[in-house]
Length: 335
Ligand code: KG4
Ligand code: ZN
Image (cartoon, rainbow, N blue to C red; front, side):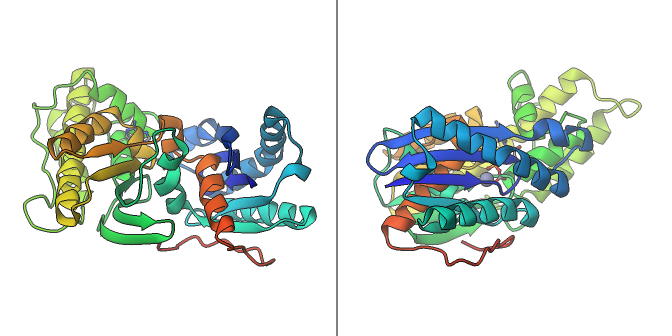
């Protein structure tokens, strides 16, 4: 089965072609960073308009690279939610109508299910069951995954998502948008021990997270360091390193706890923050200490992409699921 996947939930247009026998045939990710940079965050209306501009040309590129035409498709998958409603509607309208015109089924996929299954696109894919750490700009969740569609939420952030905390801390230091990757780059040259950031909610049982305290600690640290409101490069690097270390250690403590609690020692990391090298290294150590294994998608499949939607959609279509003709987007949608 050959399925076209469309991801348009936020500021990346991701288009991919997945074959259930041959794997990922081709994919493209167009990021709107340049469109939103001058506003310091995603402007929903501009995001929708840019998806409209880019989706069809990218579909043509993906089909051409695979040496196929639209007539060779067996299904279309699009992100149905959660995300920005206008942006989601672009992918939903396009995906639904394309499938209707081609006389093939379409399926609306949950964005986080896409992230959660992204490691299945790699050669060394994990077997079920596994524990998934989903860390993106909108979510921080620990999920027990028994199979496709069999997900149990073990814990989640009670306030900011990990990626959101990275972005907000970066913004406070005046780093360019998007802040997460930039903060992480600065952290490489910083001293993580200079400021002792808290490890929120690690001293009590449970698998929930809270990252808003780290934001407050970052703000007060910046106020303490800044001279005339300006931070020097060393301060920025040290704050970045201390902040990143706190997030990474907090996530690692909860992952260890989740593995011990469930007795499942296969861990996957997905979502944009999964591209963070320090997090990957720390979780590798944590799993190794417990005799477990860590799986993660290549960095470009950690952040938003069409391949994860094409993969999740293929599994849903193979199970006989498909969406009706109504075009729906679900901006808030628990998994
Ligand atoms: O999964 P994703 O692309 O979009 C959402 O579904 O939210 O994740 C984006 C988030 C942003 O908050 C971004 O700052 C963060 O992932 N991110 C990172 C890194 N790369 C992306 N955070 C920390 N370190 C990185 N290397
Ligand atoms: Zn995402």
